[in-house]
Image (cartoon, rainbow, N blue to C red; front, side, top):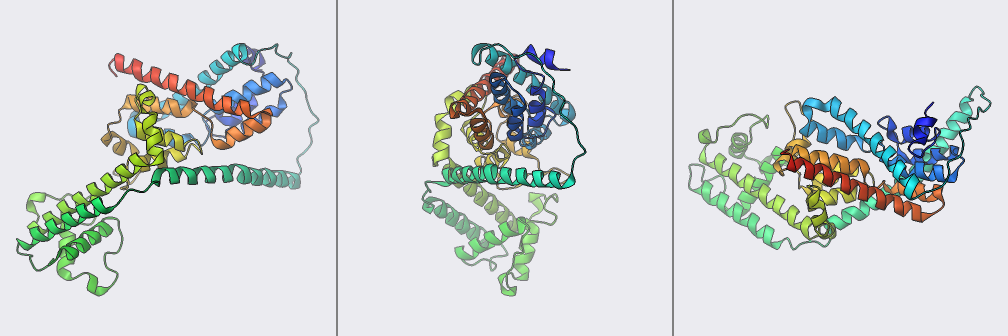
Length: 403
């Protein structure tokens, strides 16, 4: 049915199976999509199909799309998801058209439809085949994803920064808290800077929902009352700072200062890590698409698996606090808006995630199915180049028309 249409773009009717399995109908995975190209007889048609299959919206991209759409396009969630699905087909067919005419040249094979003998499936064979292929995917893809994720984590935490300057700042905050409390009516609650530091630690644990006392002597009734005033339960309860006692207000300010120190330490650690240095090296090119060096680090994380992008964004932006909306849903958009993301930048990011380099497991599958690691490397380079061009075009045009 689709052979004549797909031939206009340099593909075959049989290519539709690989594209759908790869995420043509949003979801799926590019690894079995690449393997599905075995049904194509002509090697050139097969090669073009496996090169464009990763441009489909696989299941690994969907969490990234869902979180960012919810944060920046919440009024058009369904429309945006549909638009991204349609856009992936446009890019895949356009890429196939260009590849068939300039990279993988040659005559296309005539259309031949084979009808194999159909038999009622045997349950035992189905289960055995499913188990074999599931184990093959876990063994090949799982090990690669795990190894790359470990390397990425190491790149984001090494080399380690000297913690002494940040510890000195924490000590100064504790001393200031102790001095503030000593000037008020609750002057007997905290007598030393060490006790103030312990109080701050208990406040952080209380805010995180942990038990603030490991033993009865760790928390006196007066300290418990102070924590209740500074950090009411539930945590989102409205608090008017003007009505707080001086000690509770000092504790809240001290906690904010400790949070800022933690964010500064994480940001400096990331900036000076191996991944941070690589991200800053790519910053000039990324800036054209509206990204900064921290976005680039998250995109590097997606080379292992696209799901990793969200967690890497959280690490890159030091989002150690979970942002939630009124219904308890994670609100990544709120955190990114605080980092000066705009809807235009978010859409450019979505386009880049849709198109850029396949995950490590897909690259391995392309190398094995094509019989040449050069084609696997080419799939990474051409798709990343296409992603950068399209994201840059989206962002620059959007800026110039006032978006």
